[in-house]
Amino acid sequence: MKITFLGAAKTVTGSSYLVETKGCRFLVDCGMFQGHSKENALNEEPFQFNPADIDYILLTHAHIDHSGRIPKIFMDGFKGKVVTTQATTDLCAIMLPDCGHIQEMETEWTNRKRLRAGKPPIQPLYTFEDARNCMVLFDSKRYGETVKLSDNIRVRFNDAGHILGSSILEIWVEENGTETKIVFSGDLGNKGIPILRDPSIIDSADYLIIESTYGNRLHEINEDKVERFVNIANETIEKGGNVIIPSFAVGRTQEIIYDLHQQREKYSEKMKKLFSVPVFVDSPLAISATQVFRNNLDCFDSEARQYIENGDNPLDFPGLQFTKTPDESRALNERTDSVIIISASGMCEAGRIKHHLKHNLWRKESTILFVGYQAVGTLGRQLVDGAKKVKLFGEDITVKARIEVIDGFSGHADRDGLLDWIKGFKKKPQKIFIVHGEEEGMSEFSELINEKFGIETVIPSRGESYMVSAGKVIGTVEAPVESYSYKRLAVIDLMETLKEEFEELSELVKVDLKQEKDDVEIDEINVKLKTLEKAIVQVLK
Ligand SMILES: [Zn+2]
Image (cartoon, rainbow, N blue to C red):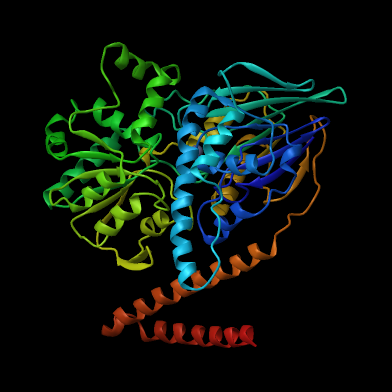
């Protein structure tokens, strides 16, 4: 069979893999690219195959970077089934239309600008309605059930413990009398996170395709995270500021609420202050997402189920409020008392969070508290990396607020979690493809796998195809193709990065007018800049 890596190859977003066998073609995930403008532009590109030729999409979980292009492939002619778990279907039913809605809003904003510039309007990738329509494709299965896709293909969904309904896929393909088993890890959960079960252990594979978001990093110890959360919140409230928590409306938000609920006795003294201010979950999805959690109790771990059986609601606590309408959301920015706002999107790229950032980033008494992974190129990542100024709604906003990261809430297994999971294979894969990570982290993770297990690894590029079959050597089939517009956007991105670096350097030299730096250092910078100037003149010629 042939596997083509269409997304999340040497990047984190845009997960999508095409598997072609004799008589059946299917995708694993059909995700949206997120981050720099060049990644966003990839969403608009036509699919590198005819959508009508695809028989199935096997969906690992509902996050938009795995599911976000399903409405588009549906509009482009895909008529097969999206096979996934019930909870993933339920979550997609609210998340995909929400994504469509965000795109309509953003297109409207862009079009207002284009109109003023005399340019023709553009169309959104898809609308709220388009996304609602594609839900007819969804076909829900249970964890552990073996599903026959065709005479020669079977698939089984196993709990990945990453978000509600998330799955690790085991796929068996029979070709020319040989059966080959491939395993897609999907996004792998963090052990011991609230509500969800730990990721299932898979005992065998011929080939493994594994995520590596935290392939070279370790999370802080989980036990400390609630205490840190409470401390940060209390300190902010004392100063009269707001705590803004960018979070996926689905998943992390419910887990934070659950954690606070569960640990409120342990930290009862400390939490008094926190619970004295209102906590808002500000998202049009928030209430429905919490409802989806309640409808899928079978996906909960035993501890969370116990709570519910005892008549307790772990997804609620006194003072917790949900704001659904845009008016309610706007009203939050007019309040003068301290509030805690949990708002989407998690990487600050879209949705209501942008308004909350606009009203709080410049206030030194407020805190922006990150609890999830921030992809390269997103506004969230810029803030985590210490940006002093950011652009919001075309306006320069100075960053004065306290920026904090607690990654113990992360939905992803860290380096040791991933290695531990690989250790669980009794029959080790003959080759491991590493995907869904940042390039630097991937090579470190790859070396670790070689060292620890002696398994060969591949870090595929976007567009690369590999022939795989049990017991046989594999080889690359095609080199990746990049479109012209993508190349141009990559150049623009590079120039933007250089511009930012120049600004940073100039700041550095400016603050050094008191001559704390060695003259030699300044001379060195001067020589290097002159060389660069010559090179730029060459480029312009
Ligand atoms: Zn995910």
